[in-house]
Amino acid sequence: MYFDAGKIIARLRKQRGISQEKLAGLSDRSNLSRIERGQQGISRVLLEFYLDRLGYSLERFTPFLLSDDEASIYALRDEIEDYIANDNVYKAKKPLLKWRHWMPLSKGCTNSFC
Image 1 (spheres, rainbow, N blue to C red):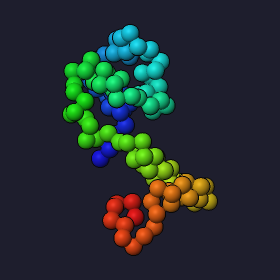
Image 2: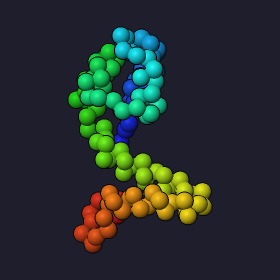
Image 3: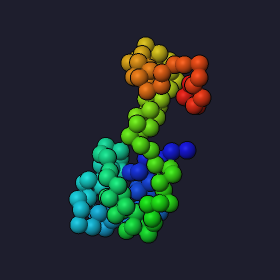
Image 4: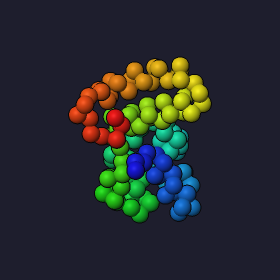
């Protein structure tokens, strides 16, 4: 299972009943809002800052966070699945071409994306 860092922050913040303003502290609340919605990336330093303010360590979540490449792969997979689920296979062509860039087809492929 994988998680988006922004979604982790939003979930923990809401569970603790903390507002975005309070969590952001001296940083910009609008940046935190964009991070939580997945519209803006987050640096490791800022992620560690937010998790620390929420009472957690970064090490606890590191195994569940995605690299940029992994996030791109999952986003493409989700986009392709949405098009196929909505019977719009023609629109799935563009993300499928991007997918081939990330996952070359080969007989030796052993991951779950093949």
